[in-house]
Each structure stands twice: as C-alpha cells, then as structure tokens.
Amino acid sequence: MIAVDDAKMYLLSGKGDVIEPDAGIIGIGSGGQVAQAAAIALIRHTKLDARDVVEEAMKIASSICIYTNDAVTIEEL
Image (cartoon, rainbow, N blue to C red):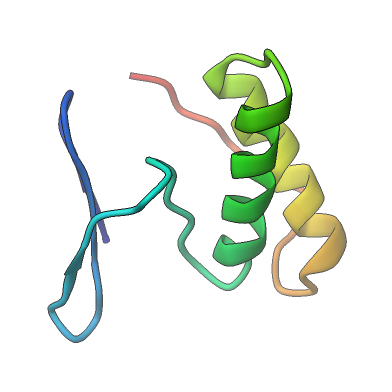
C-alpha cells in the first residue's frame, strides 16, 4: 500500500514496514521495480510532466515484465 500526502510518501509493506523512497517515486506490484526504475530515469533525463512519466514508465514495465500489461488507467487527483 502507498500512503501519500502533499509532503510525504511512504510504502507500507505486507510485514508492516514503513519505507520512504529515496527518489520520491514508488512502484508497487509485479512490475513495480521496473516501472519505478523507468520513472526515475525519465525524471532525471527528460522534461516530461508527472502523467507522461507514469504513462511511459508503465509502457516500459509492460514491455519487460510478463506480469504487467499495457492496459493502464491513470487517475489524477
């Protein structure tokens, strides 16, 4: 589970650990690490906005992880 407010972001593990990400980006699920790595690279090396980073990172993850598909719904708050 991910818990976020306007200042902090935490990953709550299945064991109850509370983890704060180093880069301010969290990926969860079977392709979460791939999507997270792609998002970190995109943030560091492009001028994409947050939505485009998510979309591109998920495309990359779905092309690498067999358990991640390319049918993605992005909801913005």
